[in-house]
Every structure is written in C-alpha cells, then in structure tokens.
Amino acid sequence: MHLEDVLYDVAIIGSGPAGYTAAIRGGQLGLKVALIEADNVLGGTCLHVGCIPTKALLFNAEIWDHLKHAPDYGIAGIGTPQLDWAAVQKRKTAIVNKHTKGLEFLMKKNKVTVVSGYGRLTGPAKDGIHNVPAESSNSRPKTSSWLPAQRRARSSASSPTTASLPTSRSSRFPNRPSRSS
Image (tube, rainbow, N blue to C red; front, top):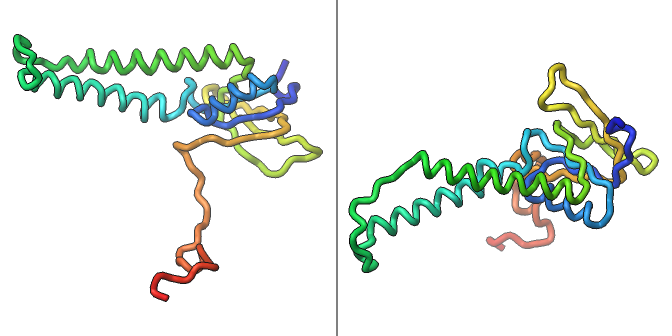
C-alpha cells in the first residue's frame, strides 16, 4: 500500500516535542496519524542537539564542580578528580539513544505512520482534504508522495518560518496609547 492510498485523519510535520506529542495523542484517540520527519531519527533538535544533550552535559559539569570542592562538603579521600571526556560523551549519547528508542516504541504502540521526508503546507483543503507533499530525505533520486489528510499540523520549532511583522509600536498595538502620551 502506498502513502497516497491512505486517508490520514492528521498529518504532522516535524517530530520534535510538539510533533511527537501530537502524534501520540492522536493515536491514543484512535486517529490515523502520519508523522513526517526529515531526519533519520525522531525527536527533533531538542532531543538530539539541544535540550537533552545539553542537560546531560550540564549535569556532568555540576558533578565535576562538586568533586573539585569535595572537602568543602566534608568528603575526604577523593584525590584529584580527572575528567574522562569520552565517558561524558558516551553517557550523553546513551541518554539520547534511550529517548530515541522510546519514541520509536511509542509511535508503533500508538499506530503512528512515520514518514521519512520533508513535508510542507501547500494551501487550503480541497473537498475537506489537505494533500501534504512529503519529499524523501534519504533516497536518491528524490521521490515525492502526497499524503491525503483531513487535518495537518506543522511543529518545527528549530526551523521557524518568518512572517512580515510591523515595526512601529503604534502599528502593533493600534488601540494602545504610546508611552510618551
């Protein structure tokens, strides 16, 4: 069966925290969900290079700082601590991998179809159906599929879109007096 042959209740672009949460919840509610992700792993920037790896490294730094000042805490006999950077990186990678595997499990458990590729929003629905194009991110030559969906969502915090924003305070808040008034 091809992706184009399935009518999804919702197609979600991006598997970061908002995307995977929406996909899991949709699956729990019995919806037919497609989760489109450009990377070869789920979790987005937060899980792979942002929040989670940073927190793992910060925890190591905190432990290191405590060990350097062990006598101040009444802990004797530690000697001179030495940092094993390879072990620090190994721990961080293990944490990220554990969460990645957990997301893969949750997608299967909640019957979410994971599509590897780049999705994009193309305009309004036609006859109540959105066609979300998904171009493969890991095949040569590039292939495209159209995922028919009744609803769609974009959750891509690490690659935001830009919009034209007003620059003067009066145009942003037309009913509010300026501070100098």
